[in-house]
Length: 347
Length: 226
Image (cartoon, each protein chain N blue to C red):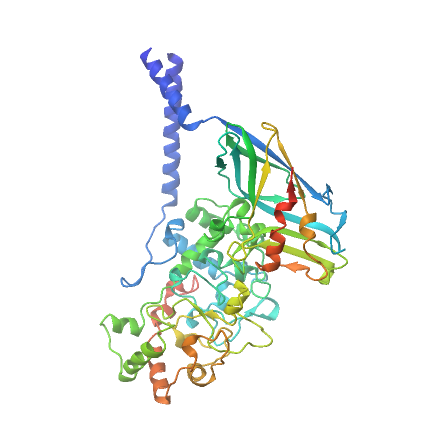
């Protein structure tokens, strides 16, 4: 009988200790969890927040990683070197971006915004989850040119990062998964939903006459592929840009091996379009005028050219001007200047 | 006394819930190059008359199952995919319910669920370099080596076979007879059938899900024998 009581006591003590340790863990971490903030009339995000709950601390860790050159081979190419806030997290004024050892990227760096609603990444859709996306530029020899192991080792060797990882993920051991999750947390907060267009739709502002006419024109002629609220339908289409013979980039077909996908690229969002020039998957079109001229006169017909562009998009000069006036209302200066999205430590 | 009985019955209950009778099956993998034990110094010749030596050979095994010898029912074994390095892994231990089994099997490759749900850990960590970063998905089997017939730099051949989506799904299921119950299962894994379906002269590199990868994947079941 005595023995049994002893066993019971031991068991109880064990259980008590266990719960104490758990309590310690949760109080030491004290994460300030938060929900993603976005307009009420937007659809639900596709990102699975249950597997990576947002916290102020996780977002901040992701921000530091995003702006840290340690993620690249020679230290010169943080994510932010190609994804610059003022260009809606594309590369300002560049067709292709610069990477390790004076190399160029294959494509125009895509602006980063409203990523929680995207399920495929890269202009060819080769990446199927936001968490795995950063591994592509990190390991691409012409971009950040690193290996995952090296990046993890470099981060682990700092005094700075292990405690932050411990706080956010409960372990100071930096892993591919936790690094990716932290980056995702920051990337997910890049929400652009406060342009003049958004304010007009919410009844808080009014379009000028050209903007209003441009809006009508846009909904009629452009929204088939660029529907609000994201101004993309996330599909892959061939807009009739001929293949560039040195880049030799056939887009979606590279991933699917299906000739029907030849020269199809992801339809880009037009939010902040005025800030994210140049345009086209390889940045060959330098301004909005030329982009609309392409749709008006230069769409190259091929078996995979989008059926909506069989006759191009007929536009008068007058209409072009109106559409451009409307596109400028998609610029969200509060996003382009949001300090929370800027480099850490800057005033 | 009643207390003791109560305690004992609780204990028994506990056993029933948590400790259903289990047994382990040990799989021993014997990696071979044309029937001889794998070695980086040994070369083999394929049906195209290419001579090949191997310096890297890794692959994933997943979806382990056994078939009950009486009911014929297939029992899936919960186990995350295992990364095998042919140059140093030789043993896998499976935990199965106690019983007698007539078949044992697994999939060469990684189930699609792990390919579409972000960054995984353990053997599936993308840092293991069995993961395509530019086109999400696992490399199911990676074989690299040299061949005088290769037209690639350094006379290398690089066969990275992967892909989880139709029409280029390279997961292949292997089923083997399992007659010696309670004994380790010795499985020979030979590269020769894989090499026999590709001409190194014509194609020294496969690095994405495509038809050439499918042709090689179709040879995977031929690699495994008892």
